Length: 281
Length: 312
Image 1 (cartoon, rainbow over the protein chains, first blue to last red):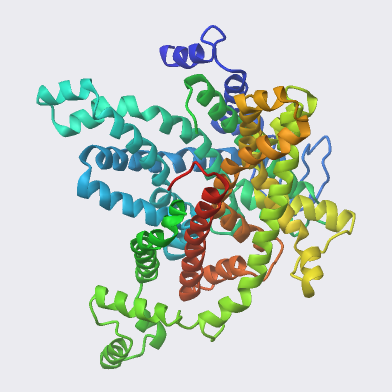
Image 2 (cartoon, each protein chain N blue to C red; image 1 turned 180 degrees about the horizontal axis):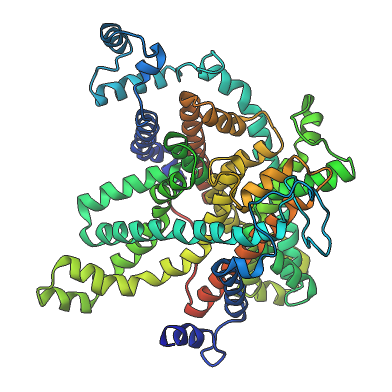
């Protein structure tokens, strides 16, 4: 129960949560519940083909129609929530952790370590994000595993920058001086004292980053470099429907709408958090 | 003019970054699993032949020496040969670069037009219905997948209405304009939300500043104040933002070229990934990185030219 009371209190009106945060959190919560128990909401199996019911337009039996294999589009979207949500959330987690460590180390140690890490950062941001990710995937081979590895290798830079900027200010503050005079180890000062005070802008950014990574992941799957068919993933579904766009527009249309709505939830949460905590992106 | 001194020394600061970018591209191709000579000669080649060919290509040298060979070739404009097209990678790139450049500039133009129109409209009607709708678009639009948007626009404007071709590049300038309208508009719709958010908030910020009150009190007409002062000052952060987003823009082009089968660098890159034509992937990656570095440099110059207070 207590695990739920904190988010609930954060969202309550008394706490002064902005409207954007409340609406965004509600949208994200709806998608999370679809991802938690897709079998409860999905009327059909997402993978099993029904060749007697192919390319049916949206109707009562199939609210969002069926694809060329007779699979129910609504059910595939609901099951796909798992994959796309996982790509967004886990695709942000690794860059977040790497970026925090790099930013802390770079900002706290300064000098040569900082100079080297920042040159590495300069080089990484010189590549277009998407282009470097697909270049790495071309070496690792298509698939979700490659997607997570390459996002981790490329995505850490934004977090490292945010954490480093905070660390540079915080390390001069009096409570860090006090911690140092008590003889605390560098690791303890960095992770126990600086990180909790430096993490807020990075945490707020991670919400907008989830949007970016969901778009990236679905675009890669659309190109055939991410999730592979017959997986019920929204980008895969859009690619499969493109062949039939002249006759069966619904196969591609609704999965894309799902991406927009999931992304909208996280964008609103990001806006709301930025407003609530006065963080400028 | 001393404000522009960075134009001279910034290229020197970029040298280590360029070395880093080339090293990453080099290592990328180098870390492909498998022995390239073995792949080239097949499984029946003897160890002696393998060693000979390896020496011939310099593959028996230490990594750092191989990297210097790579740099030397780059300096001569030599990217290697495509294993699929059997032509020098450089020639391949040369034929594919103009559709991409055309599409990129077209998309930037449409994005800026869209962003300026909608952000100005929203800022002038602050809090009213138009502002609410534009704000909804600029939030929901952050999550617009460009590849999906492209398909939706094809269904609407190519298949249903028949106004634009489904794919291709077309012949001559006006053919390009016609063929690339939907791809460019797709990118513009996906890019402009970021620009609108930024431009709208800086317009509102500038409209409330003291110099506007002063200008009003001197009896200057509102449209004059808006165009000459507010608008000009608000545009500077938006141009910077556009510069920051050039990497995103290139990424968007890669996907959108694929959706509309535009014969550009992006579709070349994606095709080469599936064909395992690694040297092409390497060359395109390197070119895109250089484009980002160059654009950021140009944006810095424009920013300094527009705002006399900025010193870099």
